[in-house]
Image (cartoon, rainbow, N blue to C red):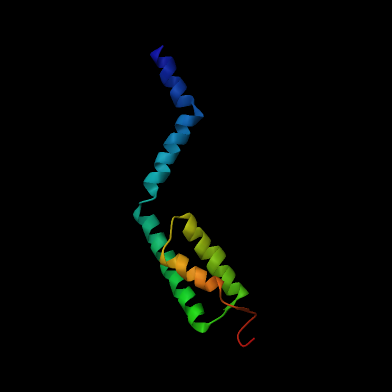
Amino acid sequence: MLITIVVAVFASAGFWSFINRLMQNKGEKSPERQMLLGLAHDRICYLAEKYIERGWITRDEYENLHDYLYLPYKRLGGNGTADRLMEEVDRLPIRQKDGD
């Protein structure tokens, strides 16, 4: 009877889902993940400050910053300064290209 219970637990989808979650949570504090968040944060802040200082942003620049850096950064758990800067970037006027 004990063997049946042990086999049933290991065969259940819920058990493996639990193990999967444990493994994912363990990876959240990995040095690689921290480095990735740090690099994304640095790049987001650098670009956002550049665009804010300039006073405008192109559609391509916004897409690159928002869709390819900021959104993945948020999904990884990033927050703070990058959020504040992105709010400011969202208020910038969009121009087609330099001088327009």
